[in-house]
Amino acid sequence: AQTVTQSQPEMSVQEAETVTLSCTYDTSENNYYLFWYKQPPSRQMILVIRQEAYKQQNATENRFSVNFQKAAKSFSLKISDSQLGDTAMYFCAFMKRPIQGAQKLVFGQGTRLTINP
Amino acid sequence: NAGVTQTPKFRILKIGQSMTLQCTQDMNHNYMYWYRQDPGMGLKLIYYSVGAGITDKGEVPNGYNVSRSTTEDFPLRLELAAPSQTSVYFCASSSHLWEVGNNSPLHFGNGTRLTVT
Image (cartoon, each protein chain N blue to C red):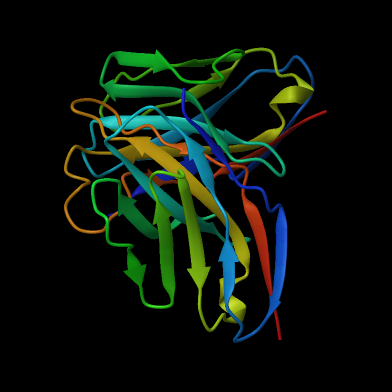
């Protein structure tokens, strides 16, 4: 079974700073996806960024980027120029690429990120 | 499109009571899921369905039942509520076309906060 570990329960930075959230995972699969989700107080689950394991290039989405280290099974999220609206819970998630069938995600425990003015 | 709609948003149950959490989606997705999110923890899969009439257990199915009589609806039933079932419950749906673009594989509802006292 796959496991996802986020070792930072809480983090806090000043507005405009850069922050990195850590995530490690354990799997014997070779074909999979990794995701970062943001959950603001509204409870909505918002996809921040995704990475296909077969792609060596790290994914980027505006101020959000990942450092994907496949051999080390590490998938960290970097938020540049942090904004007050980035305050939220962040979840790392793993999904084995399904050949057929459901897309079942395995989530980490989450990191509560606070951006201070 | 309303997406994935969950009702109710909040509920308080007494120990031993029963209730059904409703979930409906209007995207004609084949796959539907129920997750629970305990305080300070990530989401864990309770049950999932790959189509009408077909359901299967996830990681934490004990104490729950599901049915999928239509493509749109996937209710979650708690028969004898226990304090350990105090959690936020998320319903989600997906289709096999999720890999197109940079989308999330799952479309989430906004959750139901359930308290059992």
